[in-house]
Image (cartoon, rainbow, N blue to C red; front, side, top):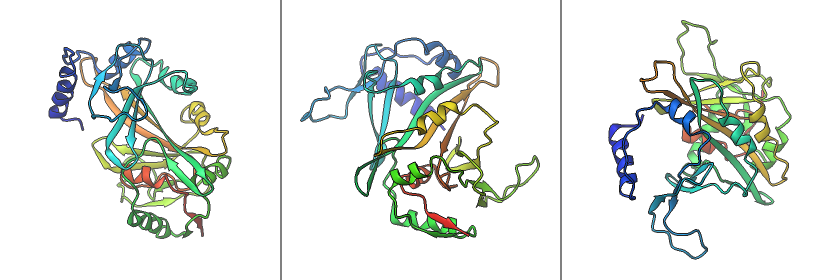
Length: 295
């Protein structure tokens, strides 16, 4: 949760960059709706992005000239990120904008985060966005054990991450699910099992109050329209694959003067990709080819 201290520090960061700041009287949903059609300010490094430049780590808010802002976590350090305003000619952002076109008055999209894998060599893959701290050997072993103890025989995949994602793109997949049925009044043990290969997408949702805990399930395709999500996975480049589409949304269930509730949901498309571990472990696990499983 975002503490009052963090809010104050964030305001100070803006204030020291030469801007006058004050807390907004709007809730998050109202704020997102009102800014949807405006040009926006983005945080950028104070140095120009020119090869050979040394970056001081200082940033400033741009003029209101952008349609999207970008944040990319450092691949080796989750506590560090790279920011800029988005050049709309650098890529096709149609699918991103489709997510922001929410018409419900009590719902707003806040962030669209994409975890991708790029294979620049025959057997090497690199994560670009988002990417937490590097995945340790211990975490890999524990993840394999999590699958093994659920009654499956597992072995490391011989494929790289891009190959794995592309090969599973058109298959039905297994997803992690709680062992108890989702029925009102059920007490959850915290134990999970891999489903049969019946799903098109798996879901991982970090607990809003504790990112060391996540909720997982296979996705019921009748529960929503997932067209925009599938569009992201339809990557045609042979050395590129989409691993996760993570959406941060705001909901306004209470009266307008009350704070909005927010949630993050990640959707992935490989066997067992929604590992029921900490959020950063889940993201790191998806850097890898999924373990090959059999009964």
